[in-house]
Length: 59
Image (cartoon, rainbow, N blue to C red; front, side, top):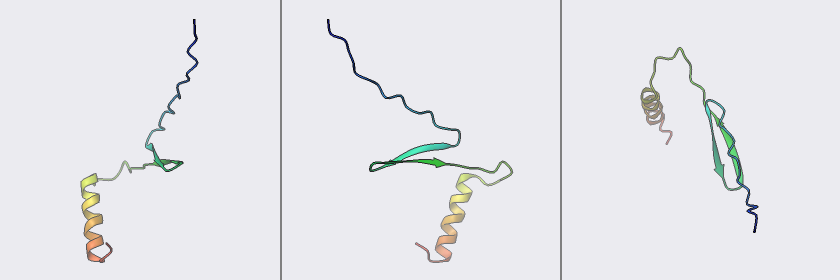
């Protein structure tokens, strides 16, 4: 009888508010922070960033 010796890599749990991104041979841990006092939605923020880029001709 043969024994299965294959190992399974355990995935590391993501800390709250972060995710992993792999580029080439490097893995980055990306942290995300949101203010609890903010009234803007993600859509509002994205629109504002795009509008500001257009105004400053930064694209």
